[in-house]
Length: 470
Ligand SMILES: [Fe+2]
Image 1: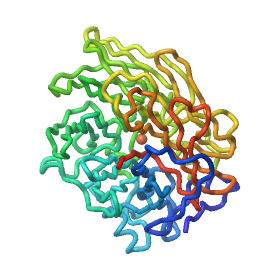
Image 2: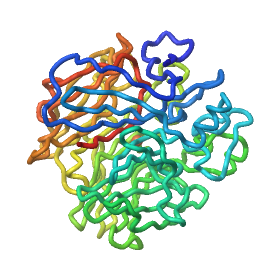
Image 3: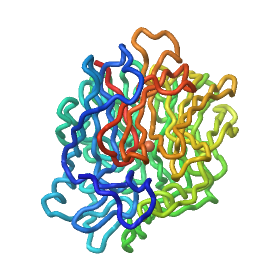
């Protein structure tokens, strides 16, 4: 059912296995603790799960078709099910029994490339509940709507005629009132698309902002007044794509341009500020806030694009990669003077998460996956809570043989503070080849999970998820 990758002695390669069934369902066995009484709802995760088909295997971690995993918490315990997103590509390739289309990081000889990005859409990066439906997200094309109960795919979402098929990133930001902000980088238009979607799921505004180049931008920050972007000097060159390179291979690292920051006024998208920072590569923001005069951000900063250009390729061949890990970095962007200052806080971190009730406002606690140096694999193996006010941190290590995936913050019902929350995520146990679900009390991370359960199988390593309470 789940085929480990070929020809490697590394136990961690099970995390890059390919799921050969359309759906998964299995009993979830409690390992320790008990499911907290107030934790009721469904935890959804997304990630690439079809890495191989018809004897061919993708060469980049980000290429595989998206499979959404759902962990539902009820009084009877936890149930798990998984289902592939039925994108156009997934359905057509399944019928053909082989890969037909170019993927993000792999372009097999003869692979089809289409100007309509949704032909290549794998919907494999994130899954976000919004206004009663689930959005399965990629970053180069449309969101796909899913039924939250059955995980059946309803199809690509068209917010408006003008935005049909336009890129809609995998990292929308949902404010506490339900307003969803998002962006998309459109290489063909050389533009940044901006979206504001009302809590009722209807598009309020969408516009495109012209860019001087087409950078690889994966995430952004929403503050009380602004939308904030960091634009790494990783630029798309159409001529490279036309010459036969993969989509990723069509980007060039041009550090002389530095890392640019763009701030857009939420109320008036024509009001924009540009800032210049030293060259670097960024996937993920913890978050951001502003006081009107300046914007404050934190993000995972890499020295260069090795994480996407090298790490995510080598692991697919079962080779141990070298990675210069991301460092948690804070920036202050002064809107009056145009000055940007950066401070490095702490090292080796990824998959940052905040309390969702604090999105857009000032927050104190930032959670992320970290490495403790003892891991017998090249991924993260612990969690950290960083207190941005005191600089203090609390850590928990899963030990050398477990891979920590993203853990998200789920507010406790009737909770009153930022620390009144659970930390919820998945862990791949390499000793038994099983995926575990772990729940921590966010205020006592160092004490270990308050509840841990195991699936009867290993799920491929995924990317992002979110929780929908019942
Ligand atoms: Fe991401």
